[in-house]
Length: 254
Image (cartoon, rainbow, N blue to C red):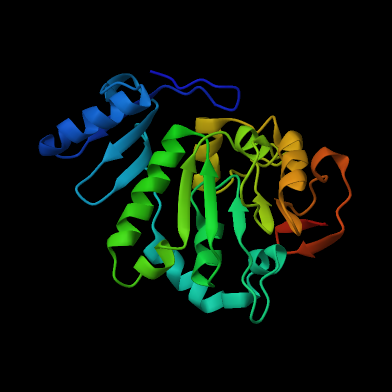
C-alpha cells in the first residue's frame, strides 16, 4: 500500500516485524498508518524489531534509517554551542530560545538544541517519519542519560503549514525550517537518510509557503537550512547567513 499526499513520494510501503511475537504490534501500527503487513509487495519496509522501529529498503543491503538520540548525544557533546543550528536559532550565553522545528524529520537538530537547554516543539507531517521520530523519542525518555533532554522535546504530528497558520496562544522565539533539498545535479547519491526520505516523502512543494507562515509566527527569527549553493526560499533574501561546509542557514530577523 502507498501513502500518497502532495508531499509524498508514493513508494509502495509495508509494515513487518522481525519477531513473530511482535506481529500484533506491527498490525496495530499498520492499521494506524493505513498500511498492510505485506512486505513481499513493498519497496520500503517499516520494520518493528524488539529494540526499535526502522525504515529499510526491501532487497537492499543499505543499512536501516532510524531515530537514535543516544548516538546524536555524542555529536552534541562534542560540538555544543558551536553548532551552526544553535547560532542560527539565537542560542547565546545565558539565553536559550523557545524553538519550533516545523520540519522535524529525524529530529537531529531538535535534539541538539534540546541538549543545549532549548525547549523545542517538533512538527512532522509524514506519518511514517513521525512514527520513527516518536519511537526514538520514547526510547530516549526511558534512558536515564537522555530523559532530561527528551523532556524538552515535544512532538506534534500534523501539517506545519496548517498548524502555523492557526491562532497560537504562545509563539516561539525562533522557527526552524529544513525543507527537502532540491534535486542534486551531480550523479553521486546523497547520504542514505536523504535518499530514502526522498523516495518516501518526495519534495516539499510548499516550502515557500512555510517560510511565509514561519515569518508570521516567530517573534524573533526564522532560520532556514539550505544547501550551500541553493537559492533562498521564495527568492527572499535573508537578513544574515551562517555558512557551513555543505549547508548554510538563512536567517530572517524580525
